[in-house]
Each structure stands twice: as structure tokens, then as C-alpha cells.
Length: 205
Image (cartoon, rainbow, N blue to C red):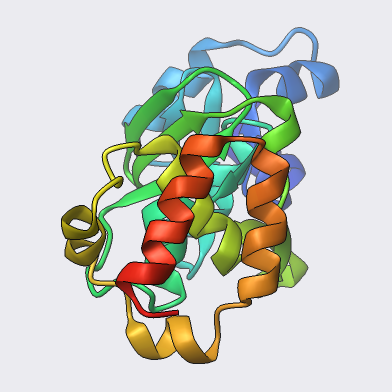
């Protein structure tokens, strides 16, 4: 099989895993992945997952791949907070929440970090549209903030919360505080409730 034949079949997927290829071609020569990666036709995203190199120049695909290479997951934590303008820093890693074990991957599209939560906490995300009629699973602002406070327990004093430098205009004007508290109750965590109340006090909400 030539690369052009392979590309004609798989390109619209943007990224794919080896099992999708074997479902189409059970006798596919796995060595092709190595050859085509060395030639720059493909980029290895993680073990068994690849993307076509053309997608490096397309917007939002680094975020889209975060959902695809480790599932189920959704983008949250620092990446989501930066996306919404809630924290001042630009974020190097693409940070996500998953029910799988905590993991990280580095590839040509970026650095990917995944934090583990229990299945009942995999909620509070929505589908954000992107190019090519695709969507990205993204935490709501409220859930991204709760995920951060839950997964990083050192945010338990006013000083640590102040150092987050959350955008006060966003917190006062755009954050849905009722939704924040509703989501907080679903965690069933007294420690998280304490951190949320401290956050509200620290930022005078």
C-alpha cells in the first residue's frame, strides 16, 4: 500500500489509532507507521496513535487531539481557565480530566497532561465547535475551577488562592455562582466545599 492510498482513506479522521487501521486493512504492515513517521508524513501522538502532519498548521487541532488520544476525557484545569481568561498565564500544557489513570504525553502538537477523577465526577463539560465541523469537549468555567480546587488540595489558604490571580471581573460578572455551588455539591467533598467558600471569601464574591 502506498502512503497516498492510506491518506485518501484516513486523512479525514485527522488522528487515528492502529486498531482503526487494522479494522480497515487486517494485513496492514505496521512498519509503514515507522517509515511514514520518519519521512514526516505522520506524527506519533502517543503509543498506537498518529496524526497527519498537515494538521499541525490547522487551528485548534492540538486541543482536539487531547480528547481523542486518551478517552474518556475533557479539557479542564489550567488550559480551560486560561481559555476563559480566568487566569493571566498562557498555558504550555493541555490539561485534561479523565477517569483513566493519571498520564502525560509529549508530541509534536504539544504537551498533554491528564488527571484522574472518579467516574461520577466526569461531568460539567460541553462541546465547543471548531473548524471542519468538529467539536472539543471542554469544561465549563465553573467545573474547570472546581476540578482545580479538588485536584490541587494545596489551595486551602487565602494566600494560595490569591496567587492564582483569578480575574476578578470575570468572577463577579461571568461566573455562574449558583452553578458553581450545584456542581460543588455533586463532588460530595467537605474539603472542596471548604476551599470553595474560602475562594468566595478571598475574592469577595
